[in-house]
Length: 253
Image 1 (cartoon, rainbow, N blue to C red):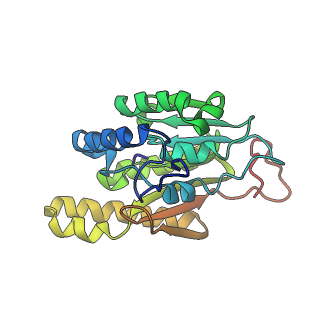
Image 2: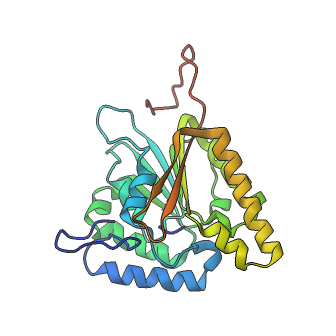
């Protein structure tokens, strides 16, 4: 769930945050602690790596020659994906980032002041410190939604409800990306109790159904350099018809 480039003198290992400076190690340690403390909402033991973050942020076009965009990130964690999105937003764009974990909110708030990329876009970034279940999502209010929630940790009905809310909150032609770790479903079902194994399979079926109905382009990509490798799914709401303008949708792709 939780979701970077270090200075040029240091290499970033897959799955390790790329916030710059001495914050890198502290952020990774904090993430691991929260993954132990809050396993259901964290869903991993290390932040997502930069290759995964870039794939998740890919639907957001670079600024310049386009209308302002409204972007929602759900499950910001320590800010890896937030940073990838911040690299792409323009001065008129808005990025709302939802994070329920107070420790991660604290880290994100500090990063908006100390990380060069996030600080440069801090005027366009709003941190919403609550569960997405409590966050209003008005219809057609976002152009791009990036979800970093660990769907496999949730009940199937909750996953379905979240995906339906995401799709309803997107403008016509809007983009939704989310990810799941590659190859973990067989391992989960192998070692889980029968009821948990059934839940895992039901969640996978919900994700497959939404992917089939709303897939865009190749639909799925894999971030092999992430730890563990992750499958990124890209969905899209129907494009407006050619003879009907969509004034609330600045996405033109």
